[in-house]
Length: 93
Image (cartoon, rainbow, N blue to C red):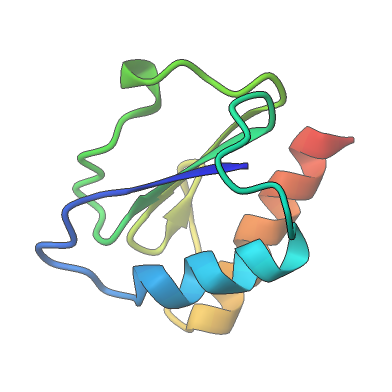
């Protein structure tokens, strides 16, 4: 899994906390270009656009504020984490 962070100029959640939780689920897969590409945008502006990156072999998951792959999630970070993990698992299958 490759994780790319935005500049975090106006984050509505902790990018580092979310990345740490995701990395715990996928130990040893750090910066794997053939896996999932996870784009972490701290706000809904979503400066990191999937079209500007070569997707991982499995696919791309894009977080933009409280949205995951374009779907708005509740504002609790646990809900965001669960939505990110669900999106990743859909790509892995």
